[in-house]
Length: 326
Image (cartoon, rainbow, N blue to C red; front, side):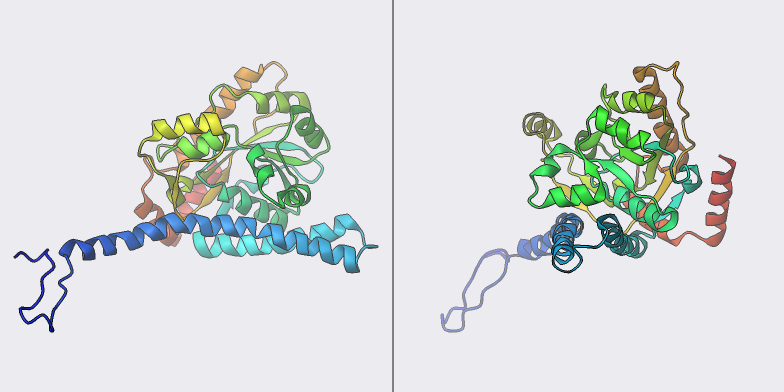
């Protein structure tokens, strides 16, 4: 009888169960796998925690501060959220932003176009950073499936998240606000990989918005965003077909790795009336690809991205000097 069988001592009363060797291997393997697939949901729960928080704020406003200025009330509520997100970004990812000086001053509109990671955690981090450092709220165009989340409508109203028609986006920019759009959307989030290829298909809506509003476009990319969260590559063709039918995220996400995240805001692409929407889209896509080429290790590596948390002072100073030259 081999070691992988279940045997009993000859007396019966003192029987001993021999655990198969493979059980220990499976147990040791399943624990880290369970962790990496559960960690993304911790981030999702943090995002969704804004729903009960803002609804509680709304209840208190209607109960005790009904006569107060509504805009000021929600501004204070947003600031508390910004502090929480900012603390989370520093502790978990040593988050940094370079290029904040490229944002226009208060009253100047600009369109931020960014590469969409598996989870757009960097957009939450950047929004918190700009609120605390620049006193500006970035309006965001989100996917329509967000409206299906119970209670999300209040979050959308307070944080200015919208599915965004061309007309509403143009109005926001003409009002002098900052607006962010990820042209790749959920498709790029689900089916992008560590090569960081821009997956925008033929989407030119953002370009039409920028041209009609006559505002500059600021390209944005977050270093190591694909190493923080990744999507499984198994049977991707099947998930592509499912997404084309359901239009909701279907590809499992894993990760939550404590990698270094650094958002880079590139030089603004000024309004140019001579450009067509297609030409402007190509120009912005090239700018994003250039940010990837200059700042991102390709293909991305999770262990090296974690190691980026421990950059030497000299390496940081050298990188900042290179960014200044750009």
